[in-house]
Image (cartoon, rainbow, N blue to C red; front, side, top):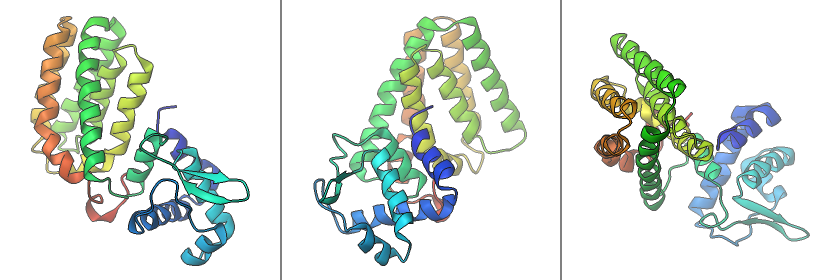
Length: 254
């Protein structure tokens, strides 16, 4: 399971009433942000949270379990529920969960995520040029074909964009790198749909994908990496702005 899947599976599979539980998790996270609670500080008790949000204690218990799963909070026996140091202890799943629920990331988190993505994808693309096998090239070609079909049909290019990048990451033969890159695309999927909504950016993205694929196919890792770096830089200013606010229309990023 890719990073980020734990939180989603927990909400949808374990809880059943996904919308209600997701909403409660989002409300708790918003409460933490608005109160400027810091790591190590104690949250209100389950009873107090249930009263504050007008829900049952079981619902609060389940929401807190989600936050425990992604290491955002911890229960201390006979003491209460405390915020963990997310800078040190929090999982990447925690960022994905927050984006899924429409809780904006702060400027530092956005900058660090974009920097991490650039490091991983540029280096990963070079590795893909060195390690790709015939089945990797076939997969990349299939994603390129899907992209051309999507553009011809004037459909949103967001999923085709993610599929191409993940096909390149998969060609590194590094499963952990693939999982981390996948988390970025899970985190940004609704915002990417907005980015590609008017159709103007898709043809240029596809052209850049085709160029990267050609370099990977030729075994030119450094050349493919340079193309990936330029490809990512063209959109980074947009991501800095967009990841710091709620998705368009106030929807959760999912």
